[in-house]
Length: 92
Image (cartoon, helix red, strand yellow):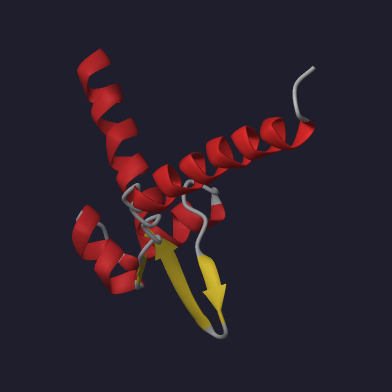
């Protein structure tokens, strides 16, 4: 019959080796936080006027985020809007 302490020692060695491998692994890149753009930046980026942007807000084409009194747009939303526009143009 095996000594139970030897079995525990082997398990601990495997656990220690696994921990060391994890400790030596490079850290994954931190998630990229979404940037927020002002109304002016979005208008310039999409080449649209402020009234057009306001209409898109009302039609829920874009969903701005309210930060206090300021309205901001997520860069990822603007980029996805551009991708959708490109897809529609290629289908036409």
